[in-house]
Image 1 (tube, rainbow, N blue to C red):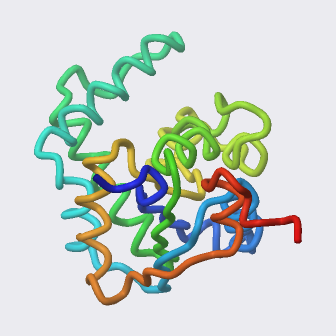
Image 2: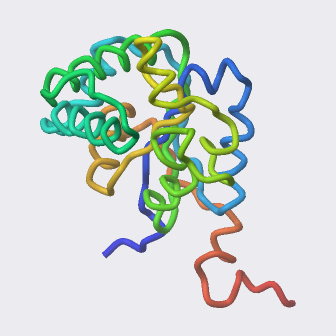
Length: 201
């Protein structure tokens, strides 16, 4: 059975993160908490790559639509439609336009509870309602209201896998096996081993 430290998650710094020169800040936060970067590349994704990414889960379009409807009602707004599949298809179109608008940086991070920790650190999907201290809460002022009024995807800097299974599927979608490097960091002894790497002589 694999040690929990081998859990991996996919993180994508979206075009707005790159354009706003936040790559170093985002990477630094994951490094500082103790995660290990095992795969990284910059690319301009195709629409096909983006669509397949979001529809790895065949229920994604419906769930995205339901999320938009729920959010609109919770904030006293009228949903743009009452049909989740219709809204989800619109959301997917906006995301394809957003993620193909410039380069992105795709990364694989490894460490104990990697999926949950990365999700906690980035904050909620909507920056406006994300907590201070999260990446989205600290660096973005966008909201569903602004995005809907402009007919675009919400700009929230980062994508991160939502579950361990989703992470496995997404990593395979974005990276070939040989693009992920298996190596040891000295700090892993401090994080995971009972003798802290033999700090005392």
